[in-house]
Image: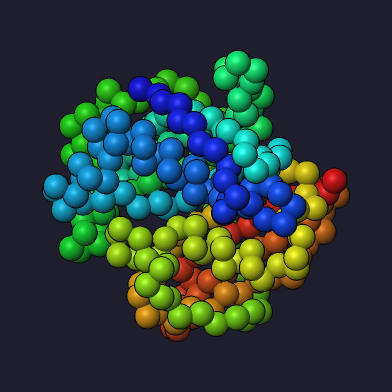
Length: 251
């Protein structure tokens, strides 16, 4: 089973360049994942009846451009595989053509999800999903699977204490909040000056309300085609809770 969901880039979703922020695109991708899971009968509301929920483990996103204010975006999503602990959900992102039909594809994403017990916070065996076989689509992921981001030799850029507005329905920090904190350490316009972007983000440990975190960006690394930014967010014990790499091609 696969689904397509249409969203529109609003004024609150853009930066000073009049284009969607990277975090906006991440939110739309995760929104499509949730909407499709709901339609398939194993969304968060369905899992909550059994005291379980979905959590994001890793995500890879590739974008050849960022859509502009007012632009509609179609996200096509499907599940391509289940393991014992993780399931793979894929997305393609496209504009909308003349007459409202499919437009040019400009992005894609691959996400890895785990199901957890909300009391123990431990992962559950996905074989317990009775309708999982019917949800599978025999189609390969549209981009390379999310990479493991290794230890980041970053400097302590800023300290942050998790507040109420950072917390999602699972009682921990919302996935895109980490990305917001990371990109906020970059110079203004650093992402707007890129023609394409590859994001790999790894969620390693939960962060919760009131927790003290440190955002640690590494120095930007120049490549033959652009630049790579790497980040590490650590808790008060120095344990990494989230790591990410953003590789961009210069215009």
